[in-house]
Length: 239
Image (cartoon, rainbow, N blue to C red):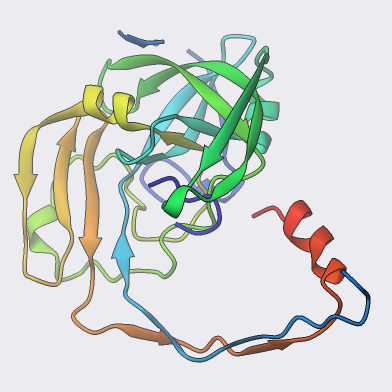
């Protein structure tokens, strides 16, 4: 499911991604007196991983940038953040695409699309695709740093994202068609409370639960004010 509000490495420190690299197929083409009150108590949050990979994207001048991708086989479309699209400087095509989430809730409307040429960091795999431009794809992923020291089943694997366990930004989201084209036979499971490794053309990706106990995230709010006080925040909020 597409998540727009909340779903470094042997290569580099990815905090300032994308970066440039000189250089190499699969084609896919209300009255003011009204008051809003919001209260929430301790939120139970399990520590889990979603599938991420480092990839190379070609910019308008043919140079390659290392970016971080989220592989989301529950999304019908692929997406790129506004920041990454600006860095690549690619030509934009006008579109009008409504984006929906769980329960058919409307998440917004994409008005531009770019064509991407993606390549793997671990082999010669390439992928051409279209991606809708959105302000932000998700927040830092994963939510917390995960201790990998006991995960013997993934040691010595050529990982698609060597820093999959460290929170960092997502530049692009690859949807179901792209994920299907990248999957390879191969799955490795560890203990019941460690992630599963999946083999792809981009390298091995991690997914699943990373701890036996849920973590409790204190999240208490009491917000009051007229409804229009919040309009600008939610409409203009970026990750």
